[in-house]
Length: 428
Image (cartoon, rainbow, N blue to C red; front, side, top):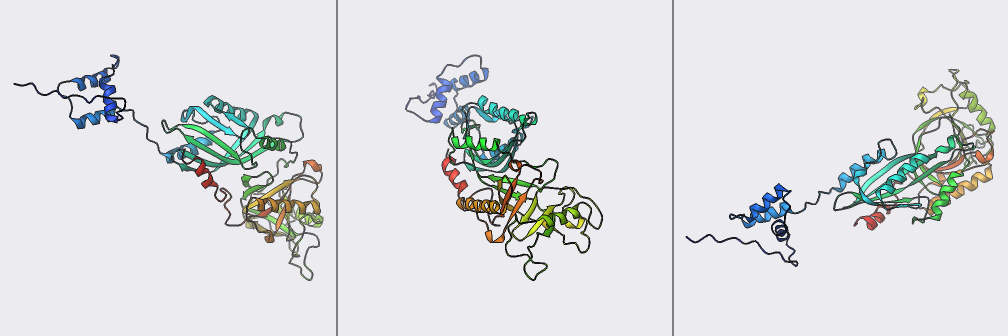
């Protein structure tokens, strides 16, 4: 009887790029260390007399080829959203999610290793008390994720150093994370800041922004409640904030009622106009001059607006609705209302809030918003916020002018911003 024909393996040639032929070549032709009994057994099976069929050969080749890990960019978004919660806490980020070589760059920092990346995080934790607020995170390509955030950093040495102010740094911006397709790990992290134009390392403009914030003497009184808000964007010359609603006690400023009216204010009032009598009326109400004879705590800031109103904020931690606040005494020109400020732009300045300076600051705010294509309605009026008592020295006073932004304005992403990042990183 004739011997059965011996099945021959296809020869592997360098120019033969067939995945099955390459895999079979490495399995059969290449020597195998005897220390790998499982792999050795597969090699012997392929060399046996009763070799697998062609279909089985292809299956073996696919099984033997290196398997590329499954990559789901949406799972990476979920991971980062959770992991970034621990960026500055005791747990820290999951370092195993990063390549050994990680390109990290922001306008004043540049590292090209995982150790450098982790060192930068630890340095920020030691020198500052950083808090990261994540506003949004999304995929912008098969291997890229974009986030928007605000980070606040209190300079911790100021707690023990004999300096008369407490530096606080704030940045808002974006982070782009790029993933290595071969292993699914982060190999690039690029930050941009909203407060500067030159984003390249090393940005002198960015360094000047840090220095300006470190030397800002404006202070907010300790121990006084204020309305709660989130800073969503910080430009060089204004902030975009989203306020929670709060309750105020309100009265008209001095001499601002329209001619012949006892209830309506004039069409426009400078918020820095004389308000000493209005301040006194609100202070008497707050400190027991109400129907319950209940004294309430002073808060900050004191608001005044272009409609002629002066407002004291009622303790937000205790009162979220006017119905819970002590009513004013009969005949006293004080009203209680719930203020829904919403999204506003605020520009800060120090010194004494005289009428001329306040109007100039408001004009500067409007010009900056037009420059950045941020929609607002100047005709709806604007307000002044004063945070300090009259005994605070002018360089340490915190004042702000504010204007409400358009209801349809998205404070997180500017028009075309996501598309621009997608075009730059989405195909990486």
